[in-house]
Image (cartoon, rainbow, N blue to C red):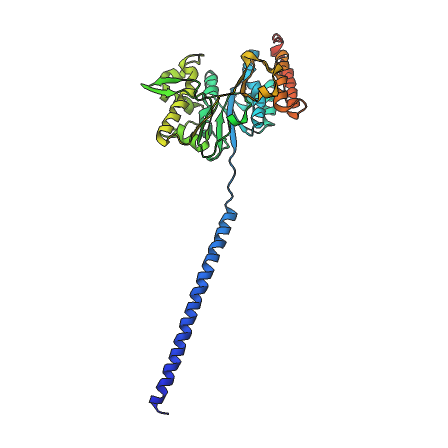
Length: 366
């Protein structure tokens, strides 16, 4: 066969080979296009499997000085701590309790160790803040806005933290819970008017209840300022804002008495000026009021009237027998007459009184 006769055959074979190659390439491309989404889906599934979003936690912060035992009145706030933690548990909050003093002091005193053991039995994180005795009262009042900076604080950025007092119990849950897409919740925000500081007017937000995400607390209190995380740095922070008067004694009704509210109101106002107030929720008190110790009518209160109370300001010396008898109707309204909570409170009050009786023998009055 001549060379010219072989040429068409070679061309035909080359053409067939080219067709086969192109077909295989197209097949590979189709396979790749089909496989790629599958691989992406599998990767997404792996990511969603490993990334578990932790639910946010609601915390409340309150505290107490270390009682000195010189007077039965020095136990007013400390005695309340476990009971107040239980009251916040009732509406779904875990307590962060700031105690100004040392654990050793509390463990070695019969009355204080009773408080401490019952407090540890609740859903609490207890943070002791070491401090000179002459500054303890001041720190017990001013440490709360800095709780998110303290070693041992359990909250994450997306958790919610609200301030309160050891002699305030929340009653109406809706007054205190976080709101969707809100970073700051102001309770009773219209109550206290304005104050002047450095030639500027600020609204006074009561510390009784200010709620915010942990991230918001950190931004508001720490931006453009050194971080306050213990007794010395908190006192220095206050001195930077208020000057020498911050080191003076706490006197009811004087400017130093409201330092915690003022410094928090200043910082929150600055935060709102920077970030706006679209993520701020102001709770309305309309239609609701406080059960106050100045008019303690809980013994005759119906459940319907009780539902209109947003909180209660507790009586003083409520661990004394005559006063504790007046507390029981409130416990029954909150928890139920035969509830374990009411029984637990009764047992705690009895144990405490048996430990502190040597200080109270002269004070068994209502």
